[in-house]
Length: 403
Ligand code: AMP
Image (tube, rainbow, N blue to C red; front, side):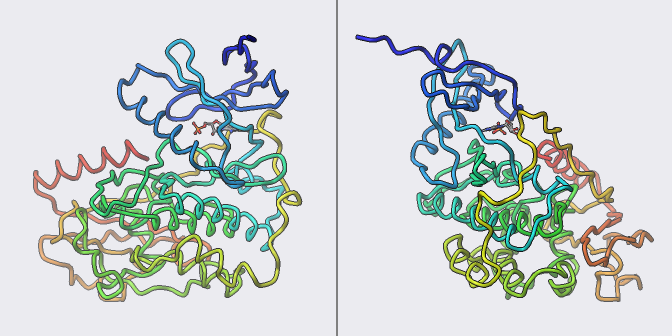
């Protein structure tokens, strides 16, 4: 009988590719197949149960998810007190594409990236898996141009209506409004919202809604799409962290995306429906006329790619925060959040604010109203009592922990 080589013998370690939440990822050569792979080393034991659970969850899910637009997990092996997950090596990711100013993204290229993202998502959702952490740097790009959903550390099986989830998932800029309002029973719509933010980012070449706290994120969403009315999203006011926002009408979506086709805007607006029940599904999105109209999606192998990770691609830094403001009211149903000057319906400056509430700082935002920007720069000064203040501090601490 021939001895199988252990993982460490089989995978010859190369350079470090990056570091995720749970451990280092390095490049390796599979000595059996001569294939380049990426090995994610997950520390076991250090954080007790949490890491075990996350690692095992990712393994279980990935084993069940086999699709051309989902990262392939090739092998798993333990070594010392670490678990090693072996993945196909991916040259780059969508964040690097979006940030690379040498790459021109045509309407056909954007369509191609969105089609691959939605195909991967449709497969996840068909298998009752939520990704829960979609963002451009988790959309990995292979050497043949195929985009694949990666980093399933936060993925979960969904389906049971009673199942309670944590709402502190997703990088904030990609978080759906129901999550920002604290919903714990959410579904595939959260991934669709994130995919829509990525769609917008592909068109704008910068993150679309860059909130600096959960409340600021909601403010930016409502400034961009208007404050939802109860008729638009009936369950909204029942969500655990619901805060009432000053009504602000929706500016035309076209003003934010002047170059987009009507079909692209129609699909985007369906993916960004406030009520998750009305949000389009990944499968329906793939059937939308956007994907069947001209220009046809660019074939993946023809898409321009940034330099490969192993060629020393610089690590993208965090995009600067909006510099915003952001003083907010605690998540309490009786409080209202005002939108900034320029987005309110006109009567806010005249002191018609709710009693005991907040006054608007005189900080007109130069960016606001510019076609390509939805920065809100709210400056709100709530009059808070000490209970409110400690509640607010806890919320801000939580926000920064998940920033
Ligand atoms: P993660 O823990 O999945 O967030 O990965 C951390 C970093 O490792 C990523 O930002 C990438 O730079 C890199 N990485 C992860 N998976 C792969 C892969 N399959 N191929 C190449 N690089 C990867």
